[in-house]
Image (cartoon, rainbow, N blue to C red; front, side):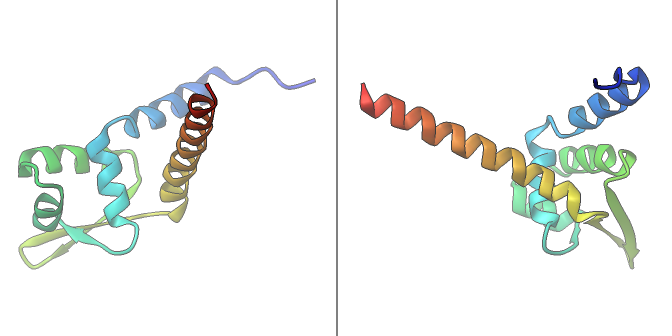
Length: 109
């Protein structure tokens, strides 16, 4: 028999999933997978405002998902743990499998 879920733990998990619920944050995590980026580089890559990128970086940083490093007058961000990106990849793989299954059903009709 499974243990009853701990409410406090479930709340923390739900808060973490909330962090992943914004597309710009997911795009930032995808970019940071391979290398650190400065705020300016992220703005350029994402083609969005600096205010938006900074807001999303703040949320990711406060969730303890990113490192922040000052280099001269620029701030660079990187992912703290590869597991963060792996989680995003796992969800994307699930969505891709579901989409393929839906397409197969559609074409059989």
